[in-house]
Length: 330
Image 1 (cartoon, one colour):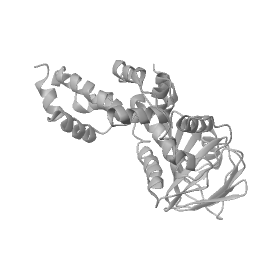
Image 2 (cartoon, rainbow, N blue to C red):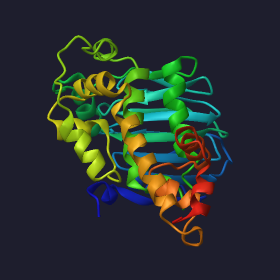
Image 3 (cartoon, rainbow, N blue to C red):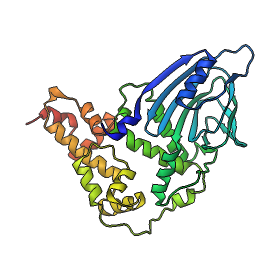
Image 4 (spheres, rainbow, N blue to C red):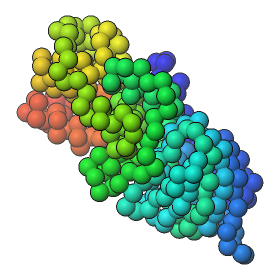
């Protein structure tokens, strides 16, 4: 089993009217917390679903009643995207809110108090492992990150970066209840996890963001990325991320991107996708149509959407993948 596979766990769904059970579920999959109903005579109708994806936990959260509560230090970074309704909170004295036009971002330190979440509040929440985000930022900047990333409490949906991060969260949220989701394949999950970490760092304001936006295009990039290229061709099904390829090549992630663009006019992960597309073509051409499908081959090679795979395949090979498969070993 690939090391990444051990971090992928089946989705969990729970519906309950019992506040004690709701608190226990939140404590198990997100954070221990208190919870109280705000309206006299109201009853809880909570629905939770959780997808554990490497360093991320993606949660679909609905309480079905107006609630409030307190959570101690999260020890993780956290993002709340409101699908409907609104909520107001504070963390260590900083006011935080969320609604249809903006997402809320939390830091790993400081007590968090939820003052009010409306009865119709439907959240997509993402718990982000603290060490994973700080390590990822350090790899992108090529400097160690030793202090807490002071993320602002808000990401606006109106900005391009904001739409990217909330769009990724909604994309993941839509797959929570899909037991056959390609997100359970490490080849798909690992780069998606890395993309969400990067998107969050680009969308939220923090003390490193200016350096992140202006990250060192002028620095010398080593000309040899051969170890990374060789690794991709030798094991194209590994769940590569930019950080992993940079480690293989012995350079920073920024240097890796710069050199891939210089040598191949594409990003490292686009290069990986091109290699996998060729591998998928070879599998389709060498398999009898009765033994597999285009969707199965696409998923095996890291393309979760068959339509996207078909479009890329036809652009590259000038024939639909189904035609290649029907021709089979001939």
